[in-house]
Length: 137
Image: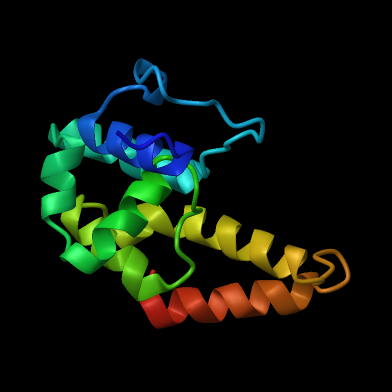
């Protein structure tokens, strides 16, 4: 049986259990922070009554590990709008509902890349207004 933390966490997400249920599991010292957008999507999954296995079966095989990694807090919500939109379609989430989470995630990305949100506020506002127009929000 695998003792790799990542593998055990992935198995636990698919099974819908706590990874500490496995005696082989070694808790990571690094904190895991779930992206608020991912928490929102998980709440929508719960509203639909979908288990993690049922949800994962709705995705192509090559995307399932990435979804599991998002659900376990290893990956943030995708920045790629089309990828996020595909997840939202499966969870019956309207673009108006997910957009604020995506915008917040995009702002975090820009700030971590070195953009100063205060000195670039008009630029960021124009950019997000343009995106809203493109998405017809």
